[in-house]
Image 1: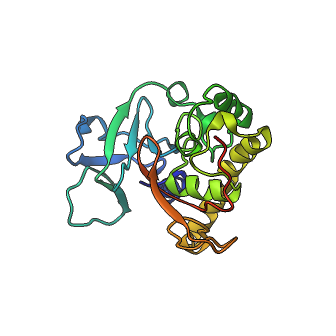
Image 2: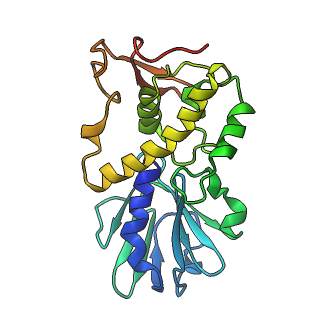
Length: 243
């Protein structure tokens, strides 16, 4: 599943279409595609893992799910979920969820919960952590209402950075560790974005998919944790369990 930084890059790749009019819309998305024809894109935004293509009175929300992809001015031999054609160029989306949003986006989304948004609010994140003390940190980091845009890679790498075991309980974390969790969720997301832009994300992974801990050289444990049973890598030696 693409994480928030990948969505920001997708937005950047599509910025040239702002101000352009849709001349045709096709695909098997279960929306009224005729509504898009002759409409002009006014903005392209992201919230967490949602790509938001904005028009005057509505927006198209694209969620890439686990295996969704997009192509700009290219196509591939796969079933199109949505294709937007313009006088010059096209946007094509595959294996994703597409919905129409008619309400103003600022009423639908809390952009202060997006770890990459300029309106990110760390204090609000801290309040939400205090209000939800019984969950594991591996679940809380994937909660899009708290850390919108954080995904499984970010979860693994943040917990390794702050030396917290993924089975730790939020309410058992010392105040300092909670602050580190919030700070590093945002910081690592921006690091992720920079590395992804430079096509070098994988070489910066410290714990994700690794066999040996780079800090103490002990074997890395791999388990499927949390309510979503997501793949989790951790070191039992240097990542402290707070339970």
